[in-house]
Amino acid sequence: MKIAYCEDEKIQKEILEESLGRWGKTDLVWYESAEQMLFECDGRYPFDLIILDIQMKKQNGMELARRIRQTDAQVPILFLTAMKEYVFEGYEVKALRYLIKPVQDEALFAILDEIQSADQRYVLLNGSRINLNDLIYVEAEAHYCHLVFEDHRQKEKIGIRELKAMLDETFVMIHRSYLVNIAKVDQIRREDLSAGSFTLPIARSQLKIVNEAFIRYNKGTRL
Image (tube, rainbow, N blue to C red):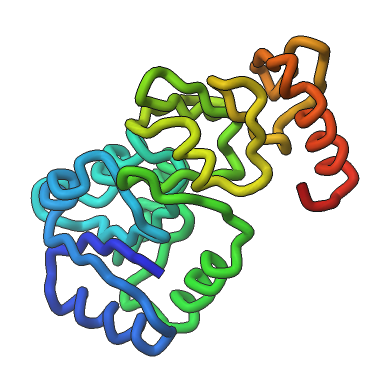
């Protein structure tokens, strides 16, 4: 499990490292300030979990979480704090949990176990953690792909066929410029389909393939 930890006190980092060592194998990346983390990550957070201390010099952990959420709505964020009054602010940044210092192994391990066992499907793409459960479709544009979610889209420098090779069988090519998450498809028509609030074109040559994939998925069998 790859974990980022932003904390300006080295002793707290060492305490967390010891706890993580008792839990199991992890890869901990330590940032001594919010400014360092924002600079080095540059808007991309390829981690299974981000742990933030709230009380830090200059920019605090809550402000850092708001910056992270500007470019990554999915990565789990865990706050460590000695002050309970920040808890309600966590709803704004969709915090996974709060732990009050000193952190108890039992509470931390429960969160790590939950993340490890969660039914999350994702790929790391150009440093971004892409949750495949939330990805609705992909649209190609020259040497780029637009990854479209219900509430946002992001542009990545990769060809659509190269991206398709990274995805699982739930993603079906419906047109030379479109991949769709078959789990998000509501209805298939002769020339297009509905996926959530989106209508996407289907190439005539792909219609049979898309129909068969849709039927198999909804029967609960593998594609």
